[in-house]
Amino acid sequence: MDKLFNPNNPVMILLSRIFDLIALNVCFVIACIPVFTIGPALTALYAVALRMAEGEFGDTIRVFSASFRKNFRQAVILWIPAALAAAFLSADLYIIFNYLPSKFLLLQIPVWLLLFLDVSVIIYAFPMLAGYEQTSLMLVKNSLLLSIGNIPLTVFIVVILGIIADLSLHNGSLLVFFFSIFLFIGCALLARLFAVFFRRIFLKISGVESD
Image 1 (cartoon, rainbow, N blue to C red):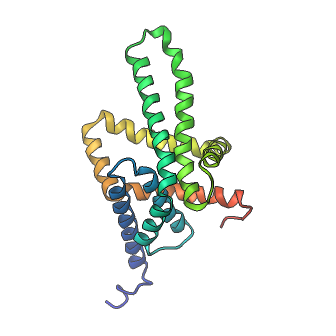
Image 2: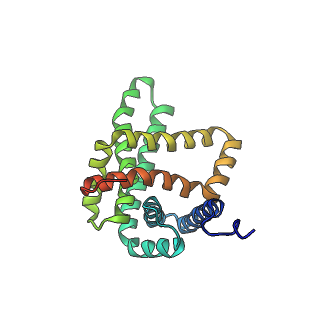
Image 3: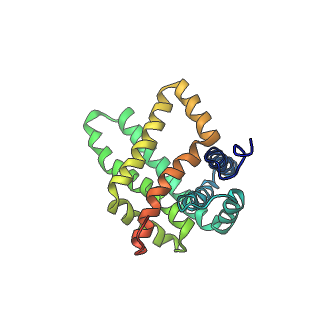
């Protein structure tokens, strides 16, 4: 029994990691409720996830709260225009596919390109903000450069998120399933996965060899 509850027991370590992810997910979901705070919430989410990718665990709530407060203003300034741009471009695509004649379908190409660039900024800007102090313009510029320089990862993340969104929108049962998962642990789990790749990229551009 003593071995079972030993902190160094692999089972206890696994349970501790799962608990950290659940705690992180709860913090993220609560912080996202006002909607306009999704940017700071994403930044704080990656602040903890990147720390986990470095092998540091514990103090999840404290680290999340500290990052949320520290980066609140800049993350909101980044998030709101990016979210509005994504909504506007998505509406454009909806109009092109549902209301315009087929001869105008080529209009989707520049819209898809702009949407991809906008999503790329969202993907990379908040993890960078979690670890580096930069102006908002530099964050946007560096996000675009990283998205292009790491196009396989960018496409990988976009495809994963796109598949989840598409399945959820076209299947009520899957919508409930994904909603439940992401409400419980899914957001933290995805951030933890993506953080592994982001950490390697950040170490590379910092001139440090990754493990």
